[in-house]
Length: 77
Image (cartoon, rainbow, N blue to C red):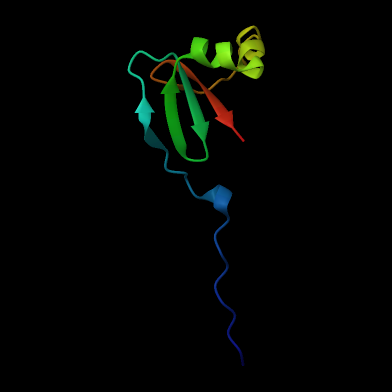
């Protein structure tokens, strides 16, 4: 009789640990999240250098938006 290995736990069942990066500007007004790392930055600087962030600034926020310390979080996929 052979034994089967235990099932792997699904990754979406595991609570993800979020870390702050070294780039955490104390007066930043936006938190970017890439994988499990967050960066607090200035939206105006992103918008000045990226048409994507410039266009996003004009959109209404989602109804149930996540925040960190009261600032919106943008997840980068």
